Image 1 (tube, helix red, strand yellow):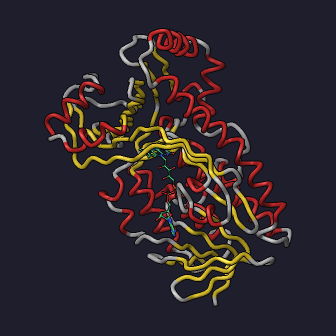
Image 2 (cartoon, rainbow, N blue to C red):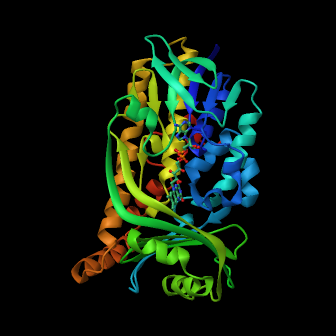
Image 3 (cartoon, rainbow, N blue to C red):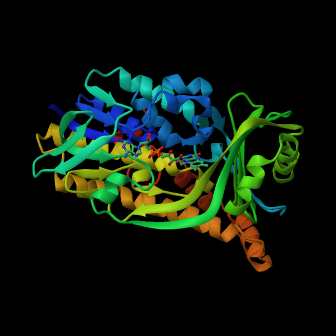
Length: 400
Ligand SMILES: Cc1cc2nc3c(=O)[nH]c(=O)nc-3n(C[C@H](O)[C@H](O)[C@H](O)COP(=O)(O)OP(=O)(O)OC[C@H]3O[C@@H](n4cnc5c(N)ncnc54)[C@H](O)[C@@H]3O)c2cc1C
């Protein structure tokens, strides 16, 4: 029998952020993951990058993870949004809101590797992986989890087990699900010209096509939203034909392109848990909400969930209060649900509004893009929202 302050099921990027955030404040914490976590930090595990916003970067800095990441992080100083071949566009310049880049593009493998390395530094953080929990019992004063023949007792169970969370389902928490019928095709391209730290989002009839500037200037990661029925065709195509398809969508503004294998694809769906909490249970990250990657925000929302919950747990401990109290859990839900719902509706709306070529709609949205581009206060608001600076800012998100 082992006793911990909290037990986290799911050692993905959000679960490990949570674990490190509380372990560094002296909490004892167990992390259970069914995967071998060292394998999830390898190049071929998911091939994705994440756009880490300024707020998430500060959180990662404050928990001691950013220092190891920064040499592999490509800054984003501009974002250009365009609608197909329209000459009207929206251009964000980081200087409008801060001296810092709006965010950084980092390969997920580096984020996982550094989070794992940080987690391993804390003797008060124990990782059970690969391991499957067998049974969870919610008692009035604690929660009991049996895993690998051991029994774990904790004050709070934190579910970070990703989209379609089994823990949420077992606790009777129902999700709202909307399948987009789209996949995100992901690959890396090398290009002749330097990207100048500019991220591009092109809205094409099948869905958004994002070009994300990676560290070094001559590589970008693509997130190409495509109708699911067509994904196998693009995944199986030989490299020459696939490169031609990429070029059609990418354009030639960075001159000659070379696609670097492998390619990956991810089914896209909106998923939102109706409640983030239950008795001695909190959901964080994709276990609570999974959104369209059009704005590169899913992980950022999860990192903010972790920072807010860590702050509330520290507050409870400082006052000698129960770490699984329902009042604290209600507060967590109140602080996070609005922020997550707002981003969810923005990404859902953008995907719907732009993923078509209906002429009057195209005209209206192009005028909209150009109008926002010429209205600095609205532009600024959108930028602050995009970097995670609107809404409750946990202490961990403040500049150190
Ligand atoms: C194409 C694409 C591009 C994206 N780009 C961005 C971006 O640029 N910026 C951004 O912020 N977000 C982005 N996202 C979203 C982001 O990837 C996710 O929000 C994020 O990975 C969620 O992390 P998580 O730790 O909550 O969940 P997951 O990464 O799903 O981790 C869940 C963990 O739980 C474990 N697990 C699952 N079930 C169990 C179980 N029963 N027992 C034990 N362990 C279990 C899994 O092994 C895994 O390690 C993108 C998503 C896609 C699809």
